[in-house]
Length: 111
Length: 117
Image (cartoon, each protein chain N blue to C red):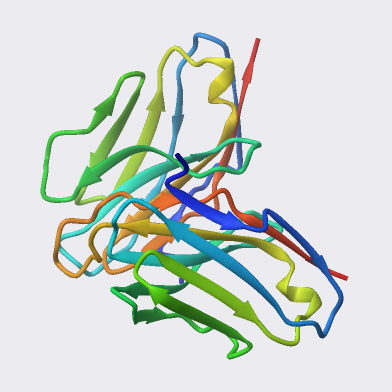
């Protein structure tokens, strides 16, 4: 059974628009951490944002924000004011005792 | 000032050969990892070491053997390479290992693309 599910294989967004990537996860732990990583064509894995499960407040990092719904085990990522440099594959991940990744969502920002 | 470095970046070899990928981190982290990213971009943990001690060993063939000479290095040796071993291998490091503790960000190396012919 997959621990992290990303249901959108691909998303396309116009520059300056907003796009939301969905992620659901499964864990039996009460204390865990959630991450969104970005992998551009260079293949370098870059941390975008992280969320501690015990914090109710949604994390934000500049144009990136999350909607964390613990009861629903949902952790979506919103990219606001999309830029061409945001074009990449985005991975949702949970760390409850090891880091487990979703299958990824390819985001293409159109000029 | 590369935080996590891997060598080589590309590795092309014949089936049946033995090869190694080296990883070094200069962040002073205690924990290091190896991940495999397959052709569909799916990333999966293979091993983790904490202070040179093996902590996580996922269901990986025993042809894969990690070796940690010190906590700044975690090398991956692969014996009798098979076609299915073709993938991108990522090394990563973090300050702490999650076990009810604060989970630090994992810093990833640039990856090694292994192609087995």
